[in-house]
Image 1 (cartoon, rainbow, N blue to C red):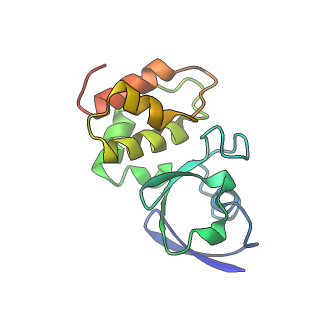
Image 2: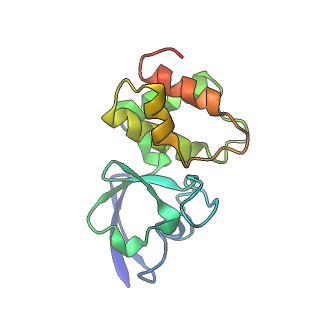
Length: 153
């Protein structure tokens, strides 16, 4: 089935099964490897992308369900001032340890800051719930979100 996708501002037409998860279309068909496979059921957050600005688990989202929506991956996030600010905060605070989950963490954090520019700790907890970091960099993640929001931790 031919599916048209808008990914990071570029149009792509892919010929894949209609139930193929967006994650596999991104990684295997288009070579966009920022979103990672972690669990396959949308529970860990490593595969998080934005669909029309909302954080979505791409491992459990069929590519055919995306429609005309705009998909943003970590590769396209830096095109926005907010995305750049979040990525810079992550680098400034050396948030990543192994780094495997960090693209998903950054995608969720950016979606939070787009809707709540000055989030409370409770807001951060709610938005980041379900983004698992095996290296347990949660304190640095919170500090980077605070920094990107203009609040120091």
